[in-house]
Picture 1 (cartoon, rainbow, N blue to C red):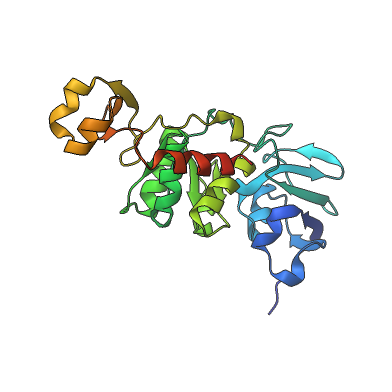
Picture 2 (picture 1 turned 90 degrees about the vertical axis):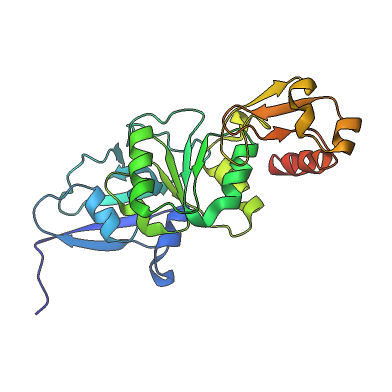
Amino acid sequence: MTRKYKYCAGFRFFGLLGDFLPRHRRGRPLPYRFDGRPGIKDPIEALGVPHTEVARIEVNGRSVDFHYRLQPADRVRIFPLGPQGWQAEPPLRPPLIRPPRFVVDVNLGKLARWLRLLGFDTAWRNDYEDRQLVERAAAERRVILTRDRRLLFHRAVEYGFWVRAVDPLEQTREVLERLAMRRETHPFRRCLECNGLIEAVDKSEVLQRLQPLTRRYYDRFYRCSRCGRIYWKGSHYPRLLQRLEALHA
C-alpha cells in the first residue's frame, strides 16, 4: 500500500545540482510530500542532492539556512556553488578556512598532486577508507573532494564537492573555479609526495644526494621539511609553468 502524506512542497534545483537528478527531473519543479515539519536538509537529500553541494536556499523568495522547517505548499529553490564558492546569506555552514584545505579520496591521487603543486594543503593516501576521510574532514575542517557522491551525504561532512571531470588537469580547473580559489594559489610551496612545506636549502647540504649532472648544472635547491625530498628547477620546470598558466586562463 502506498503511504499517503498530508502535505506537499515544491522543490527546484538549479545549475550543477541537476547532475544529481535523473535527466527527466532536471530543470523542473519537483513535488515533495511529507508529514510534520522536516528540516529543509532532509528533503533536499531525499530528492538526491547532497547538502554539501548547496550554496543557497530560498523558500518563497526568502533566503533560509539548514535550520528552516518545511511548511505546506512551500516553494523551495536550491542553488549550487557559484563564483563565490559556499558564501551565502544567511550562511548555511561555519566559515570555511581560507585558503581551503582538502582531504581527497583514493581515486583522485593526481588531482591531489596538482593541488599540492598549487600550494594547497591536501591530505591524500591511497588506502583511505570512507570513515577516515569523513573523520579527518570533520576534525581538521577540510573539504572532501571525491568521485563517490555517497560520501557527501554523511551528516558529519560540512564541506565537500563531487568532482565531475575525469582528466586531472580539468579536475583541478574545476575545483579552482567552483570553490573560488584562483587568487589563493601559491605554486611550488608544498611537496608533491607528502604535502609538507618546501624550503630553500644550501647546495652544500644536499650535495651528496645529487646525481652528477644535477650537481654540475644546478645551484638552487629546495627540500621538503617533512620527508626530505629535494626539488630544483630542472628541464621539467618550464612545462609545469605552462600548465599552471593554462589553469588560470
